[in-house]
Image (cartoon, rainbow, N blue to C red; front, side):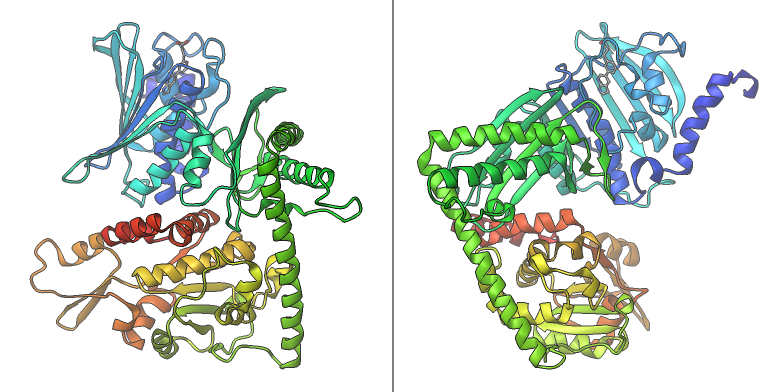
Length: 632
Ligand code: 0RA
């Protein structure tokens, strides 16, 4: 066997060996996110084929055994002999690292998606088993692999007059800690891809439950439909404004619409990748909107010649927008490589958006007026809030430490070792106080529904006692004056019940952090405590389970000799139990909140708090069916 290896073959083998040795280098990590990344890699290949104009639909199927099928109706991966590698092109694609993008000539791929963009061979390397089926040249062709090694050479299996590619793979349990694909996670990304690629039909099918579940996403309106969808529960001030053009090799699509809300919902993408950290396209967009509005306001006399101008922040209030650019060689920068760095994109987006908006304003004076009014109102509110803040700061300075009375502080003065638990309700607050480590853990009970941050302007938010208490406890101030270096606790842990009220408060807090203290989230200081769902006893032994599967794995299928108690709220635990399961480091599980999580909370918030009643009803109804959806 060994003697059969040519130099080339060894090279190939080493390639995929490297992937198995350090999977995180290729897919980020080997937990949940990495597992889902496998699906995205396969899907990205199919989306690329759609971008090239050859695929019109793709489907993702989750099978009961943990495997996945991704199928498209494109041209099919070529099966003829690759001139350099002397083996079928499909084998090269499947077994050589980075081989995916090498088919430049006839393929004419415009751009390539995928954050990691590592190619399908990485999926192959990290799969226990994988089967590739290509419909092409009158036949169905098939190859099989195990952990990246070919176990069945390419062969014809039957005749067909169709074309397309099917990838079936079963993630390798030796590599991944996570096993389960999440419908919600996949649905979110696939829906997004359908919005971003107008007309492309994407189906997600789940065959794991008793009843199969299936959803198809197809939007002939592209990102205009995206904005429509985002604003479904908001009240718009005007019809959606959109533009689509190519300049200097950069394809730019923008859709935007103001609503009567007070937050911005900006989604930016480069080559279908969600650029969470923003970048040049977003900068160009924001400046274009600001300048167009200032220009119009000045021309119409709403702003006097030397009256200053409205700020970008004011112009973003209540704006929902999707900015999608596609370009040949995207530069991704930033901590998570989700910030677009190509400088020329900035001026291209600027010019297109500025031009489009100026035209829209000229054509639609009524809507232009409504937008200018809204922006100037935002400016006034911001100034009022600043005054209120200055006032409250002076007051604090006069009142000594200024730390709020309800705060049960910790002894430690080192923020790096200090934690603040934001606890729902006075009674749970009392339990948490009894269960905490007084050296490092501080408790701040928050009563009831703190406030509707969504539909409230900043000055009103600040009038709220609970919010002010929290801000003072954190020490950072907020908004423009937020100062992360003053943070008094490096872990802020939201501890609420797993019910409607709990999720409400959680969503409120996350929304406030997201809007007014975003670096807290960006720098990973915000967490959600995860209390156990079940307490299990057998004689003197005691266990805790944080999910249904965990419960099953402890008590087995019949669970006869075990006493199981289901916890519905924090209040059902005593101080010692709460400490053991949820507060002490070691046992406890914390979910760190990412910007995406918070962003999603914001969306949920719109659903909950929007003025339209129907979505809220619908939401509460949905909630009754599944608690999981609410878990931000
Ligand atoms: C290279 C060349 C051609 C198609 C593809 C790759 C291709 C790859 C994947 C992966 C998933 N689905 C796919 N569909 C197509 C085009 C070759 C030609 O000119 O026909």
